[in-house]
Length: 277
Image (tube, rainbow, N blue to C red; front, top):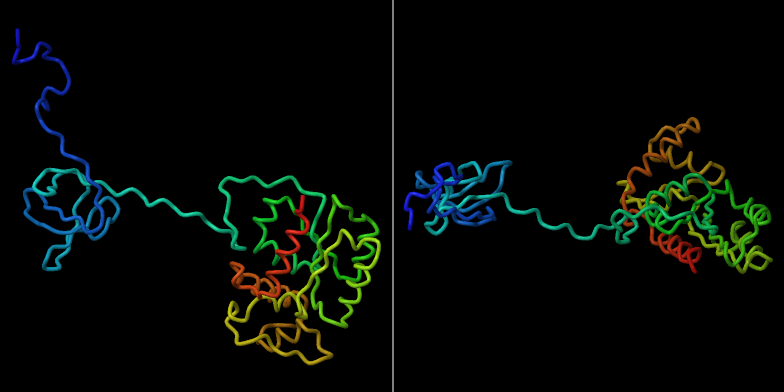
């Protein structure tokens, strides 16, 4: 027997029996919506928190709460916030693709040496994520003069390669003579020494990143960093002043685009050299 009233007077949903639930529609840009009971018709222009903004054909804009009470093509709908667009692959400061949730690799025996603390900080800021992913440690020498002594203390091998980044590596410089001697010596097979042409790693930061036309020319006989600070109008009376100047310079570096190509290629070369299987 067909019981038109139902057999269970306590059953849930009896009030909605026979009703059609309105469809849920994402409030995407330019969707034309009518406000039920209001008559306002407009296109979606933006989502503002829990509200949707509609603009009618006269350019008038109004905010309405997301949810029910709307019509699309004459049919009731529930407006919802559109799903967030999927994020594309992100890149590290060096331009490499970042790997999500990647842990730092256990440090390799191979490593990269740089001349000083500023060099190490600059390399870390731009290539730090890549170096941790590869397990490469960067150490500073406090001067290229100590390189040979460092290599003698812990000689490189095929399994423990050393890459070395040197400032002012130009023909006939002290740095180039040291590099050539080591390359010819007993450590040469497992050491790669490269460098940039600048007097100091400060110059590896582009003038554009600092908002200056060019790095100042410093006369001979004046300490280069002190001369730069004075020329740029920065304090230069004590070591703390040049330290603060470097922190300012470093703060203007956010990606590899803020560095000179003469440095970029050399660091990439060293990373490749020390990560060869």
